[in-house]
Amino acid sequence: MELKLYNTLTRQKELFEPLNPAKVKLYTCGPTVYNYAHIGNLRTYVFEDLLRRILEFNGYQVNHVMNITDVGHLTSDADEGEDKMLKGAKREKKTVWEIAEFYTQAFLEDMDRLNMLKPHIKPKATDHIETMINQIKQLEENGSTYTAGGNVYFDTSKLDDYGKLAQLDKQELQAGARIEVDKNKKNPHDFVLWFTKSKFLEQEMQWDSPWGQGYPGWHIECSAMAQKYLGEQMDIHCGGIDHISVHHTNELAQAEGSTNIKPWVKFWMHGNFLVLKNKEKMAKSGENFLTLQGLSDKCYDPLDYRYFCLQSHYRKELRFDWEGMNAAKTGLRRLREKVCALNTTEKTPVSAIPQSHVDKFEAAINDDLNLPEALAETWGLIDDPNISDANKLATIKEFDKVLGLKLNEKTDFCIPESIQSLIIDRNNARKEKDWGKSDKLRDQIQEAGFIVKDGTCGTEVQPK
Ligand code: AMP
Ligand code: ZN
Image (cartoon, rainbow, N blue to C red; front, side):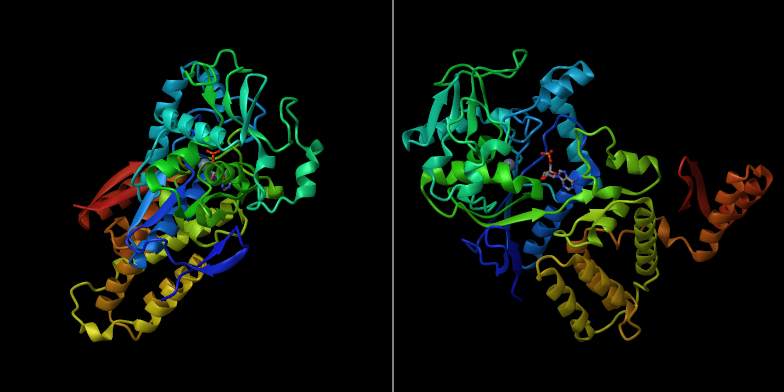
């Protein structure tokens, strides 16, 4: 079946054909590890995980690279603002290296808890300074750089098509007044490739370079590391929509400016934002952001959040609220209950595979990752009375390779309904501090053959 993906570069859905069918090259911009990822960041990573799973579902092998930014990213995404790593270090009175290590691990744990596939390569920016220096040297040889005030800049006027990804037209490029202009820049959109005259004197991370001791600008890490691990061209490059106008525009300029090979990337794909009430964007630098752990503390399973994300198309803004989270939690629980209730011992001939459901599911995911439709189709399958339990289960397992909801794993949701209702009664009794009733209900559940565990999120039971 054809796979169509929306390409930000052309602003349309296009048929996906890989550069080399043997292996699809995928690069996704990774986290800046100065704080926990918030659930908005995680929405973008869930979208990228779904993309990877869908490519694999279509039979492609994927080489997935995701960088870890541990140097050079300023709070503005351009060359202004505070150094994010330094900000984290000051906040926690640790070294930037300790901060980077801690939040990298925290991020990888979040990926696990959301059942995301691990990238095949996770290069850290600080391990690739030489690769970046080499790319800056190539740009210098091609005449795309200049040095001013001690820093090395990319000269955007040297590329005819600078800004093509963001569709910045020339007029807008001239209207630099809207950007906070660094006096050293020849053109408003020029950006730093290498800082030597650091405005952050306490910057711990500094390296020798042909232009003096200093550290790289943020954008160079992605173009340099992507080319190191994926070669001069790649199939798909992803990130959140905020990356279109600055970070990805500048990565593209560096990559194509250094090799003169176009296009560097065939498909650019961007996930829309998770927003709060009043359309406010969730941001790490803001005070109020929610983490995955924050959701767990409120007794949501990380996969409840994955289900929440799956209910909305990745190119649409998604509004976060607790009603939505509760609905997602209930939806996932019901779906699991139904999967658990399937009779797995029943045998049915293979010919009875529910092809129409499979076709609809595939059509949905291959239509630019239409997960809301694919999820609806999963429900359609489970509720279809004309399909045997064995075939439902086999098909759900296939669908779950994309959904990643661990639908076929035996969990406490396989507990019979009669016991589920005793658990609910017991949770209510505990809320009302009716300890006598709660003890009686515990005995009843235990007598029925289950172990009872009381946690902060209520009673959990397991078969003995
Ligand atoms: P950062 O760690 O700040 O570099 O961001 C990591 C990823 O999250 C990037 O791809 C961003 O585009 C994306 N992102 C940032 N804020 C949001 C948000 N509110 N909703 C969805 N994605 C976001
Ligand atoms: Zn990047």
